[in-house]
Length: 58
Image (cartoon, rainbow, N blue to C red; front, side):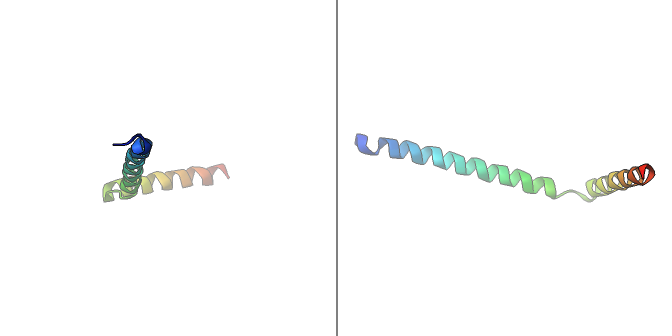
């Protein structure tokens, strides 16, 4: 391999890793949105409790 292209190859390797990392991050985010029904019920009841508390304050 000529020296001319060495930095280009390094750049491409780094870029590839970055893309994989981004993809992994986006996958994590989507997983947190897909809650199980049990988790949804808990989140909803927590939300209802917060609403009740805020009504009491006002």
